[in-house]
Amino acid sequence: MERLKMEMLDPIFSPGESKVAIATLPVKPAGLACTAELWLSSDGVTKDATSGAITFTSTGVDQVISLPALTMPEGGFAYRVFLDIIVEGILLVGYEADEAVIIPWVGPPIITW
Image: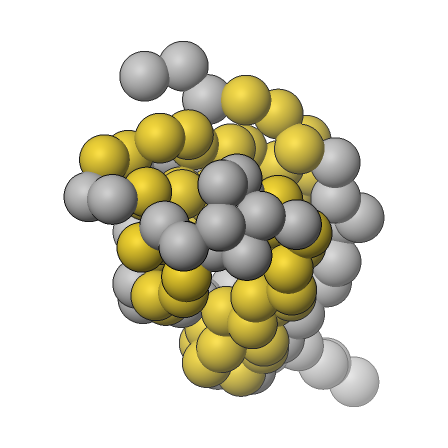
């Protein structure tokens, strides 16, 4: 499956911080059983953090879906952001954000006198 690009800001979060992502999804027609999953990956394959599968029913118009409790992974990486949309049990489309979630890491300082 070829992933489509989606625009996103380049946020910076702390390791272990919990976030809720809000996605506006236009799925047509109304009445379809859908699932959305937002996930972060340092290698494009491993799900380092995930919203889990969030189920919803399409309305036929843009609808706002909350993808909750995404706990930020360890620091020191720029994580790629993916969004998968499953409709009626079929992975219909996958997106990759054009930016990354940055989790900085700061090591312990060494101070000498």
